Every structure is written in structure tokens, then in C-alpha cells.
Amino acid sequence: MVKNTYIKEYVPRSWFHPKGVLKAVGRIKDRLPDVSRCLFATFTIDRQSFIEKGMGPSEAFDLTRDRVRKVFFKLRKGVKWEGKVYRISSPYCTKVEFHDDEDGWPHYHLIWLTRRFVPVEMLKALWSFGRTNLKRISNEDFDYLLKYVCKNGRVPEWLKHRDKIRIFQPSRGFLKPLPQKEKKEPLINPEKKIKRTHSIGERLDKWAKTALVVTKPKGRKPTIMEMPLEEEFKTLYDRLVYSIALDGRYLGDGKIQIINIEDIIQWKK
Image (cartoon, rainbow, N blue to C red; front, side, top):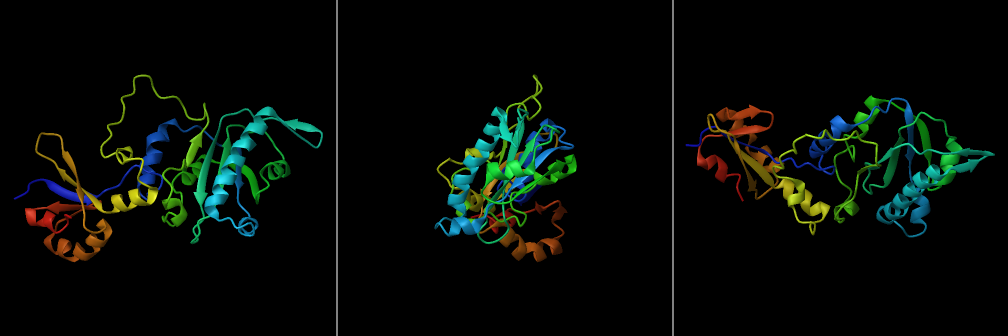
């Protein structure tokens, strides 16, 4: 008999995981600045122009992310436009996202911590790879912006072959400083435990085929153990959900009570 034990889906802290992205945001949530009415630009890519050159979304990403850096650099130095110099030295951040279609072409969101005016036509000229949208952002929009990388939750195939891509990049001074005496968050099952040699796709596959077994002894701290699965957690859950419901073992919040050791065997690899 197993007491006070349940199994649940493994959710990493990762921008690439549809649920784990909330953990990634949660780690910086208390440090996010007030962006209300700040300058907010979106840069998209004219994919046809890249396709005509024999380039796909992966090559487009490598080329355009460098252009984003140059836009920030030029604006810090000052850009002359129609007889006037526009300069933005404020802290900023970049958030990259991928379109929901099969190819998953990238686009970029840029936020400067300033309410200054800059001409949208000037930004279009600095970007030059596609459309440019310029407006003021709200804190609610910023919060929503950080909660997904792909709205459909699926990572593009070309991206799965990469080892690492920085989804959210703040400049110095964009995030609020950490409290001096803040204790470091305990890293239970951190993403960085997985070797850097693993691609994003391999990590996603590993996470999908991993569950957490949690035991909560009375009066003691819970123990958490990773358990490899033969199939994806979702596949096994869908197959076993009827028997779980009949047994009254569903605890809510994705937790499934383990009563006997046989309950674990049917999940384990």
C-alpha cells in the first residue's frame, strides 16, 4: 500500500513548453517594470522575399535577430530622420514569437521603457525586413505577451533542432533588481539539468515522457521523484482516465492518487 502519494504531469520551467512558460514568466514576474504607455514595436518578416532567395524560417531568424540588435544600437547612438535626430537610450527588451502555421516564421516584439515619440516610418527603414507596427503598450498586454511563444502551443519543427534560443532578452536596467537578501529558488527538476547537447525537440520529448511521483509523509517535507514513461503522459492519461475516474483517484489539478504499487507500474517505462 502506498500512502499519501500521487502522480502528475512533469512541467519544466521553459519558454518552449505550453505550461512551463508560466513558470519561466513566474521567475521574473516580481521584477517586471511598469510598461504602461511605453514604446512598443512589432517587427514581422516578409517571408516571400526570403523564400525567393532559397531561405526558410531558420535562416531568416539568424539574419533578422542580428538586425534587431542593430536597431537598438543605432537608436542609442541617435538616428537622423527628416532633419531631426531621434535617440533612445532607455532600457529595453525583445520577445521573439513564432507564427502558428506549419513553418513557424519568427517575428519580434520590442519594448523601450520610454514614452518618447519616434516616427514609425523611421523604424520601418531601420528594420526593412517586413512590416513594422508601432504603438503604446499596457501592462495587461505585456503580461499576455509573455505567456506564449506560439499561441497554438506547438514549437516549429525547425526550432526543435536548435540547442538554445533566447526567447525573452532584457537589457541592463529593464528588470527590477533582485532583493539583496532574497533566497535562491530551490531548483527541483530544473531544465538546465538536461545536458546542453540535447536539442529543444529532444528536451520536449523527454519532458512529455516524464511524470512526477510526489509523496507527502505526515509531518515531513514531500519527496518528488522523476519517473520516465513508455509513452507521453497525455497519451497514458487519456487511456487510463476512465479507470482512474471509476476508482475515485483523480484529486484535481492534474493529480492522480496512487493507492497500490500496481498503479505506478502501468505508468512506468
